[in-house]
Image 1: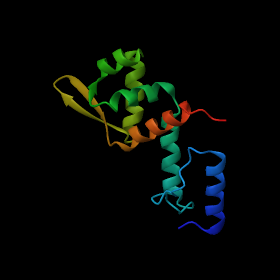
Image 2 (image 1 turned 60 degrees about the vertical axis):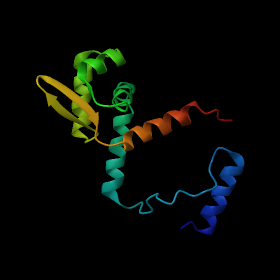
Image 3 (image 1 turned 180 degrees about the horizontal axis):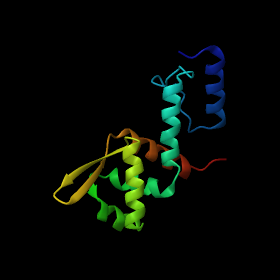
Image 4 (image 1 turned 45 degrees about the vertical axis):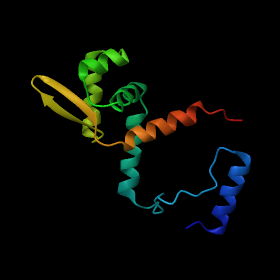
Length: 128
C-alpha cells in the first residue's frame, strides 16, 4: 500500500511524464532489505548488461533453438555464443536439452523476455 508521500510522488511523476501509469504496481516487492533477492536481481541485470547476451536472449525468447541458429541470427561467433550461454545457464536464465549431438537452448521462463521487451520499449520511447 502506498503512503501519502509515495502517492503524491507517483501523481507528480505522471503529470511530468504522461506515459507513466497512475495505477501503482501492486506486485512490487516492498522489502528493500531482502539482501538475497536484491543480490540475485542485481546479478540478473549484470547478465542483461551485455549487448551480445541481450541478442542471444532475444533469439531464445522466440522459442527453443540450437547454438548454430543463435550464431546465425546474432552474427556472433560460435565460441562467444557458447561462452555466453554457459554463463546464462549458470544464472538459471536458460536451460539446455540435448537432442542427439545437438544442444537446444531455451529460456527457463518468460520473465526474462518480459524484462527485455519492457526495457527495449522504454529505450525507444521519446523522453522529453
